Length: 478
Image 1 (cartoon, rainbow, N blue to C red):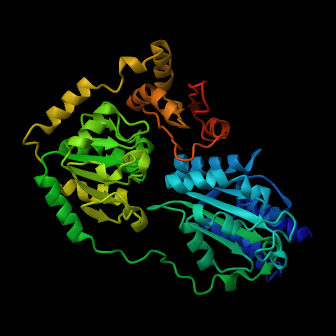
Image 2: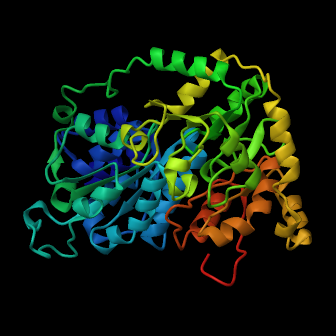
Image 3: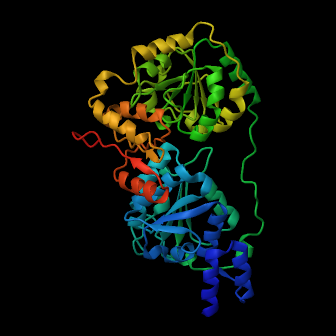
């Protein structure tokens, strides 16, 4: 037992190979499967685990506690929210995942999973499950303690869900985990049966025949991009529409090129902090929920709309999607064939491609000149229909106070839209926030309750920044 304790302590300060060598030198031939999973996750860049403890994850917690920074939360929904928000903020310095137990542990995190699925956000959920010998067979309702068929329960709101009823190898596990990432992120849920968690396994055998290249061969898009460049060059009234899958980093780095090019740019609500409000090319947000009049009018007058990383759901297109950008050829660039082939929204050209890669590689090759005064017309509309209309400024003193607070370098603004009423009332505030350096975080599609507190605690204590949370509407649950 003394040797086991010594090995366990070494896990805290050592890398996987060093620990494994010591483990072998002490005469042990196998490791607990939960410890093997921990090191595979560590190799994939995970450093932090948000969890709610439970009996069905006892071995996972035992294996994870010495490899990750494990942070307990009061509710599984908070675990999902914190993991997603941590990844959104700190991808360069580590990643986070959520760990929940079986039964109510899994059902409590479903809203967070659904929100990430609809918003195309990265989220990894590791869940416990009853022993493999106790798994129910449908239509049985329950067999094991707190058992629920989590794999099928979340199947339609995850990129993939899987139940590990026997140890799988590294190649299989890592391929599951990586599906949560860019270019088309989304939630992955992996259940691990209790007996499998505690199994002694030979890690070397599980690592055999590992394929290190998990990416599919890239399709050749040269012809499509050449066609797109020709369309942009010949267009008289083009509009670039950026969505949430065009990341902050990519847009900010490519912004000088976009401004030199001079093509007007709009954003969806999910991407409202991508372009500063004072940029000469920014026309505002399009759409029905949180959209702005000038931006929607410019969209309606454009003869070419290039949607980059924008999902273009009904909140964006309205309930007559066939009337979206009625005078324009629509080009959609999105890393999902499924999203590109949505019914009712016909596109002249669809390109299943990484939005960031498109911005980095293709924008610099585009040539465009404003031959008819498209930008002058855009500016006239922006003056006629300003984002900060007097009718929306119900409390200018409040707006001024918010602006002062958000100008401080350590403040980070987070906005959570829970309906059209709130989105409209926050419109002037969000416009002001974009002028500053703040990052605005939106989870609009599922409008999850219980979001504000875990986000605030995470930002303040873990990410070392101050958060400004807005709660405006008292007349409804918005």
